[in-house]
Image (cartoon, rainbow, N blue to C red; front, side, top):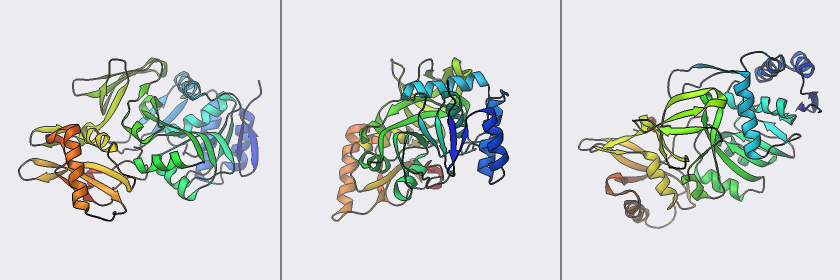
Length: 357
C-alpha cells in the first residue's frame, strides 16, 4: 500500500516518518503554524503517546489540557472516513490550526488513510487552488472562504460553532461545494461524535445522529452525557442541553448557561431559534434569541435579527413573526420584542449571548 502525501507551497512530502522529518527540517521554522503541523506529524509517525494533545479554547470555562491515546485517535479518524465515504487517495485540505483537535485529527486522517493533504495557512479567509474531495472548517472560516477565498470542495464538514441560515443558504447556492455536513462534538470527545446532513435550511432544526458506538443520553439537568467507548470516552458530562429521541438522535438545545428564566418559565434560546428557522426570510442574514433584564420577569425573551432592512412596515413584520412563533413555541416562550441589530459572534463563530444580556 502506497503512502499518502502532504503538499504545501507547490512542494510535496510523503506522509511518512521520513517525510515528517524532512518537512520539519525545511519548513518547520518558517512559521508557527508550519511548526505545529511538523510536531503533530512527527509525533504520530514516531508512534508516540498521546495520539492527540490539545488545550481547549476556554470559551465556556477554564482552558483544559486534553490527551487522547493513539488507539482512540485512530478509532475517531476511521469513523469520520467511514461516515463520509472518504477512501484511500482522498484529496483533503487542512485549513484548521493543528493546535486544536479538529486540525490534528485532519492531519492524522491523511496519514493513516493514505490521503493527499494540501496545507493552507489557517485564517478567516482560507484559499486553495482547484478542487478537493474534503475540507473541514468553522462557520466563520467558511463565510470568509465563500466571500474572499478560492477553491472548491465536494464535501464540507462544519464544526466549532453554530451555522447561520444565511451561511447555509449561501453554501447551498454556491457551485463551489456539493455536500454540507455539520458535526457535534468537542475536544473531550476527539472531534464530532454525531452528524447531520444540511441539504436545506430547515435541516438546521433537524436532530443530530450519533456515530456508531456512540450513545448520548440526558442527565437530570437535561445535559448531554456521552459514551463513546471506542474513543475511550465514558460518561462524559457536558453543559450542552439536548432533547434525545427514543432512537438515539437528539436536538441540541444550547448551553445550560444560556437558559432564560422569564417569569419562572425556562426558555431554551435554541428552541425558539429552531422555530424561527421555519419563518426566517431571505433578507435575514443572522439572528439570535437572548434574555434581557426585566424588572417584572427577571429576563424577557428578545429576538435580534441582522440583515438589510426591507421596505415596508417592519413593526408589522415583527408582530407577524411573534404571532407565528406563539403557535410554534407557546406564549410564554415567544419573544416579547424583536429588534434589528448586529449579532455578536466570536472569531470561531459562536454567538456571544452574554454580550447582549
